[in-house]
Image 1 (cartoon, rainbow over the protein chains, first blue to last red):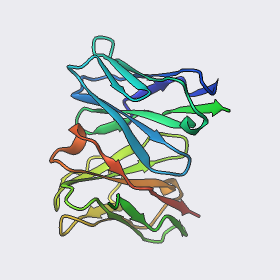
Image 2 (tube, chains in turn orange, purple):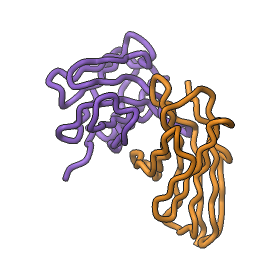
Image 3 (spheres, helix red, strand yellow):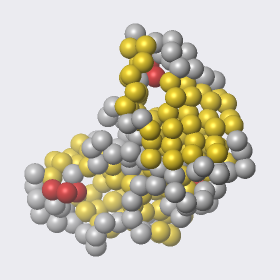
Image 4 (cartoon, rainbow over the protein chains, first blue to last red):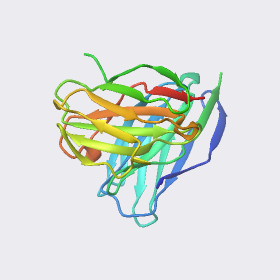
Amino acid sequence: SQQGEEDPQALSIQEGENATMNCSYKTSINNLQWYRQNSGRGLVHLILIRSNEREKHSGRLRVTLDTSKKSSSLLITASRAADTASYFCATDDDDMRFGAGTRLTVKP
Amino acid sequence: GAGVSQSPRYKVAKRGQDVALRCDPISGHVSLFWYQQALGQGPEFLTYFQNEAQLDKSGLPSDRFFAERPEGSVSTLKIQRTQQEDSAVYLCASSLVVGGFTDTQYFGPGTRLTVL
């Protein structure tokens, strides 16, 4: 069964805007990871945030983690058409569990 | 350097046929994972290897699913007597360290299995 739940399920924005995706989970975790998947491709790892971290940056990506609320957010700033993809959060309890993903469309 | 590769990329099987899906992880990666991804869903964990040892197979949906990694590198996921509900993309991932859930997993492109 899936643990992470991404929100929204789909997001459509204009190029240059920021995109925020949220992930909620149910059990305690050691870390939370965000992945990206282009249509028909495998997953690409974006960023890992550990349970003792609150915020992490990587280029145009910013991830926050609130363990008290069991939630994380992924912010993509200054979005580009090439950011169009599905984004998944994944948590580790006993196994790696992924959410259903947020489908992001960035219109040029 | 080569990433994780999977073959075949696409497989069409008739219901009842056996299939074998191959995963070539990144050289030297200790941990190997198989996931099943249904259309429009996130990947679901199937099984995990540490070198040649299958440490967790709790996600395998039935005893028709079998995975092996005999020499601690290449892995094969076998599905016997395929059913239509087995249609999905099967993703393989590898990770450098032991217990790779806490480390970056590198995913292959997946094998899309369609059972008719």
